[in-house]
Length: 136
Picture 1 (cartoon, rainbow, N blue to C red):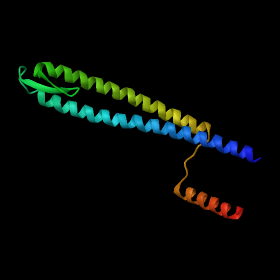
Picture 2 (cartoon, rainbow, N blue to C red):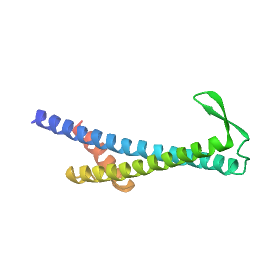
Picture 3 (cartoon, rainbow, N blue to C red):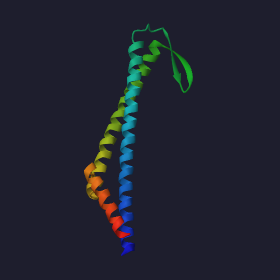
Picture 4 (cartoon, rainbow, N blue to C red):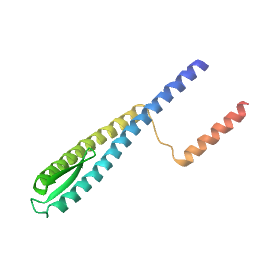
């Protein structure tokens, strides 16, 4: 009987750990999207500034830790392409985030996982504490 309970607890622990792993993956995707947003804003700000430059004006850009000289005419299309690629990456991550949310919801329903309110959690802690005292 005790062995069955231990196996059941281990199975429940594995379910919770997998659920937490899925949620962590979702958070990582969300953080990456936030990072992409910041990068997009930064590149768009640079584009806004260099659009007014003369085409022959020298511009410097750091590439892998090295300062590289471009003309404004060379840098504009490069920066526009980078912004476009970043936006495409963000859209892919957005789709991935939605898919991960669906996967989490499906797993939650499959294993009947529900979130406790603060009151429910406190009541459960009290009940467990009372049960532990009664067993001693």
